[in-house]
View 1 (cartoon, rainbow, N blue to C red):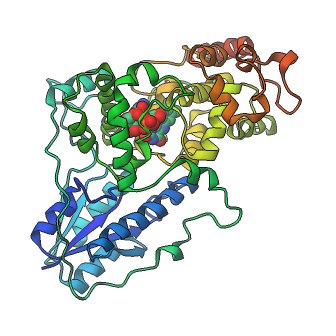
View 2 (spheres, rainbow, N blue to C red):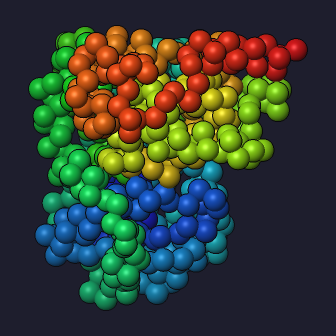
Length: 464
Ligand code: FAD
C-alpha cells in the first residue's frame, strides 16, 4: 500500500531516512504542506520564502527525473495528511523528526488523528548528527552547556550510516492533486528585492553537494580562516543544512578521515548545530524568553517606549550605525540573506550592548532576513551573545567593533558592502572618524567608550 513521505525541512533525496524507509515499503507519495498557521507568529520570513520556493522547485525536478512528482498543498498539515491518507489508502506516513514546538505539536496531533485509522505515523531521525536527547550526563539528564555536550557527542560519534538515495521511486497511478508552486507566491513580486540572493546562492541538493566538494578541499584552512569575513573561508552550508538539502551525517562521513585541525574545528561547529536543538528540546520557548533571571526592565532601553530608540533599531537594521563592520554585516544580511559568523557576533553584541536594545528585536530581524534563519540556532546564539542564556554570562564582555574589524582584517568586506567607504585605505576604513568620514556615511550612533560604560552601568543596575 502507498507510503506518504511528509516533507518539511528535509528537501533532499540522499540520506533522507523518511524517504528511504517509504521507498522500501511501497509506492511513495511525497507531500509538502505550506502550513503557516501552526507556526503562529513564527511565519516564514521573506528570505525563507525565497529559499523554500527554489528548493521545492529543485526537488520537484529531482523527482521528475525519476518520473515521480511531489504533492504540494496549502493548509493545516494534520488535516491535509489525514485526507490524503484516506483518499489513497496509505498505510504509513513517514517523516523525519523536527524539534520546533509547532512541528512537534503537529506530529503529536497527527499521531492522535490517525489513532483509529489504518495508517500510522512513523518518525525517523534525519537532520542531526545524533538524535537530540542522545547525549546525556552521568545522571541521565540532557546537557545544558555546550562544552560538556560537545565532549559527550564526540564520544558517541560516529553518527548513523549514510543512506543512499532510492534507485527508483514508484508511485500510485492515481496521485492526489497538487497545487502549482507558483500560486503560493513565495517569491517577492514588486519590488523584487531578491537580486542579491540570486547572485549569492544556488539553491538545492545538487548545489549543496557541489559546495561540499569544494569545501572538502578547503576545510583544512578553516581553523585560521573562519574569523576573516573578507575571505570565502567558511562552508556556507547553513541554508542547505537548515532546509535539509544535505544532512550533517553526509558531511560528517565525507570529512571523517581528514586529519586537519580545520576539520576538528569544523566538526565542533556542526555539534553547535546539534546543541541548539538539544536546547530547544529542553526549553521550547528559548528563542522568545531569557533563561537567566534578571531585571530586564532595567537593562534594556525598550525600543517601543520612544521614537528615538526605534530609529536606532532601524539604523542597525539598515546598516547605518556609523560602525563600518556592523554596517557591512547588516547590509550583507539584507542583500544576501546571510552574514559571516564573526560579524553576526559583532552586530548582535552592538545591538544588545552598545544600543541596549532587547536581544529579541535582533533575533526577530535575523529570523525575517536570514536564508538560514533557524528557530534553535538563532535563538541559542542570540541568548549566548546577550548573556541571558544557559551558558556563562557574556554580557559584561563587550566586543569593541572597531578593533575586531582591524584584528580580523575586514577592510575588503567593508568595501564590498559599504560602497561609500570603498575609497578609504586600510588604516582608516575600520574607523573613519570625523576627518575621513564621507558625507553620505552616518556619524556613530554612540561612541564606543560611552556605550561601554552605559552598558556596564545598566548591567550593574539590573542586578541590584
Ligand atoms: P561554518 O562556519 O562553515 O559552519 C558549518 C555549519 O555549522 C554551519 O552551516 C551551521 O550549520 C553550523 N554552525 C556553525 N556555527 C554555529 C553556531 N554558532 N550555532 C549553530 N550552528 C552553527 N546559524 C544558523 O544556521 N541559523 C541561524 O539562524 C543562526 N543565527 C545566528 C545568530 C547569531 C547572533 C549568531 C552569532 C550566529 C548565528 N548562527 C546561525 C550561527 C552561525 O553564524 C552560522 O551557522 C554560520 O555563520 C553559517 O555559515 P557557514 O555555513 O559558512 O558556517
